[in-house]
Length: 296
Image 1 (cartoon, rainbow, N blue to C red):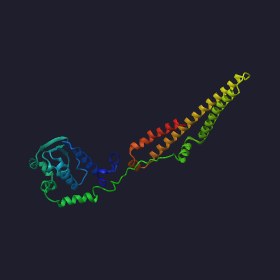
Image 2 (tube, rainbow, N blue to C red; image 1 turned 45 degrees about the vertical axis):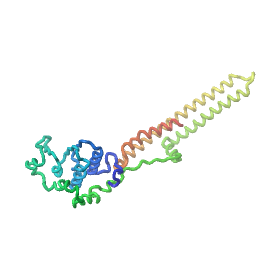
Image 3 (cartoon, rainbow, N blue to C red; image 1 turned 30 degrees about the horizontal axis):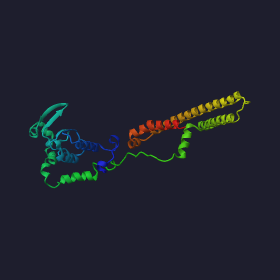
Image 4 (cartoon, rainbow, N blue to C red; image 1 turned 90 degrees about the vertical axis):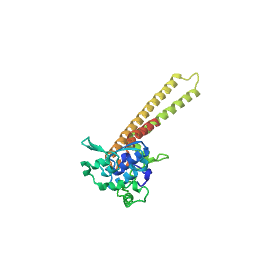
């Protein structure tokens, strides 16, 4: 891979080919440094030269000494590197034994002895320089016939995030979604609510300043109660209009998000993990609505 062990892998390996997924799974298994390895047909997704390289450098590499390896494969090169061979057909074991015994059975006729050359030379090349086949395999890997550089391009888009004060266009967009008539009602009810509250305070101050034995207490209490009722009415109206406007905006935001998601091209889902999409539709939308409702 272009980025080595720092390459970004999309969700479920979306930007990897089949061969790259097989090699990545093999590398992860080798990093675990286990005592027993079970490889399920990992050579089927690569060509013969890369399969030889994997057998020599990974499966038969120095880090795999004294490790038990079970390899299920149709690749005939691996037969000549096995200590024990098991032939299976239709889910049943047809034969098992060593390589020498295998060559004496009819099953050996399906294999090509020449295919063992890349594997049988492993031990003889430990103290020698790289062979032509090794250079060829390296060229295959370097030239990108197996590792397609286009497929290794980082296809997952980074999540955008803005910091700082909220722009005016955001408030305008939210007001449009809630409805301008509802926004007008919210401002009017909020203004009248505050005005009635201030009127209540002013009337109470006037009552205290002008208190005398001749003043009518019932009159002052009636006016004060009227201000309280009016303030309660406009407070309830402001809360209702704000909640209803927020609900209208939330419905419209969710409808727009869902419509954009349904109409999005397939490449959008390749570039954005499902967790990010669900986070937009559920968590962040809910947080935005609840935060606005709590801070009217």
